[in-house]
Length: 432
Image (tube, rainbow, N blue to C red):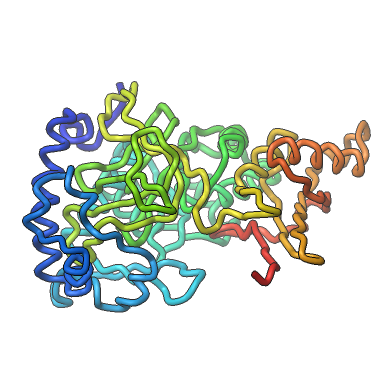
């Protein structure tokens, strides 16, 4: 049995969790209806009143919120508390349109940090650990969330932020960091840099908490091997609070959602209909005790599966699978759905690092798919297989995985730009 930050709630009975959700949901819907005009109008249009929501069984009656609503209501239209009670904002990196700005009361921050503390403890963290936070700070939620969680656990917290890899490695060796929190692509880069400098034996890391990007099981194994750690997934989004909405336990097989704060549903992205447990669909969250930015039925665009199968760690909260892609950054190439994680799986299986770029274009009305892959230094010295043979092998393996042919180009080590935040994996040049 594992370690827990708040055992009584993390291992609560199903009945107790449902009772908490029912009570909080009924209060929250009433509060949102009374205080958030934007959502009240949406409820009125749908002909639903707060008194129609008596339990989580009535959740499906409420209207959805989407990213477009956040843009339309920007900046203050979805606030559930007066500004005088808000103490902070966080904001997304926003690749499209207006940035998303989320507001927090002190109570919201305390809950968020508690959720991150649960994730750190689930990864084996205690007050004796040195927690090295290399997520971005500032408006990005990664740094502040894990930083606060680390304080709550009582770890010595190193608020490193991302970048300046020399300094990261120096602090890691000098201060004996034991837990690293960053994006998986930065973890892979750190592993590469540590091994190149020959200081792997001076690194005391035992665990890593990696999120903010989709990553494959193969990439996990590669990072674990490169840094000598156990790598745990963490999930969150600024709109809902930030990292810590869900997190992996020692089973490393799906992330427990903090159900005392967030209700998860899986819907059909086309029809909006709620799907039964075990179906792949779009993840929808309802924040049941958030004060400043209380989103109800927010569509994440993330695709996954929910499972209530009993977990060996003892936690009773529902698990979400690792992300299977997004309903919006899934690439549709010649009519086929392609996820970058599928390409990554093939590359790592064939012995390449997770340094690749996918370039999609449209030539003479037909989609083209090019994959640039860095050769590893070991492969350069291995003369058993030439570059063109390697390219051929990858073309075949990718076709077996994706069902369509990709043009593969093997490039020099380190010739693809490294990212210290989120990696830019996809360049879509199509004018659709």
